[in-house]
Length: 335
Image 1 (cartoon, rainbow, N blue to C red):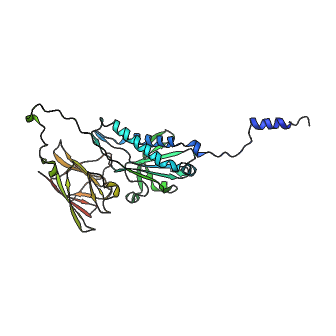
Image 2: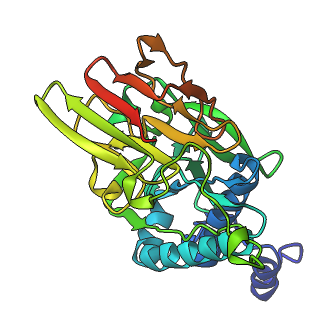
């Protein structure tokens, strides 16, 4: 009996060395709203540096935020506030870089956030302490019909080993274990005032700046006229190109407010499908295609390029542009 520990000694031992019990990680304590916000800002800033090129500012506009189901349930009421703070932070970053970039050229027309709960992503387990942010330039996230036609998508995600974001291709099967609920989806439209390059004040009226050669003197006359015919609807309409660069895209509610979008009511048009711009240096129009479907100019196939790195091709003053063999654009430059 003398060799057996007394009751008080046994209790003391339990205090110093607690008995083994299963530990439940509290998602409220491990993942804060601020941490989710910081992950979103980090993803945005990485894309801003990675995707911007020359004098054009480009960045991710669509974000997937993947959390453990317990964390999702604990944090879902704060999602609208997190999104609002994230958008304010994005705008501040953009405003701070306006002097560096002359043009703000997002591929999408809105910021899109989608939260989901899952226990696995890309073969890696998702724990209560994990926050996965996947960023993309435009609508290639789950739920986008255009994206679903492809086997893989281009995204950026943070790698655990390096703690850095990297651009990768992800198979759509990666998302099959994630529960993306409609209450966890948020769309915030944006509109930017593109800064104009400063012009020197003329000393006399005779030295006032002249319009670029070959372009109409009246802005109201437009730079070009684009007539478009949609075969599936047997519908024809006309578009006056007033901006030096426009985006050709499918007609979607999120694109309605964008002033330089040519919106086409056709399922055969990608979102976006192409861009048309006037090159002041070369003094002619150019076109770049971003669609996985065919884009032809006067029967010549225009190879597809990435929105972050457009490959421009000369667009004749008079041209027929065929989108996916179903939508015909007749382009006519104004003198």
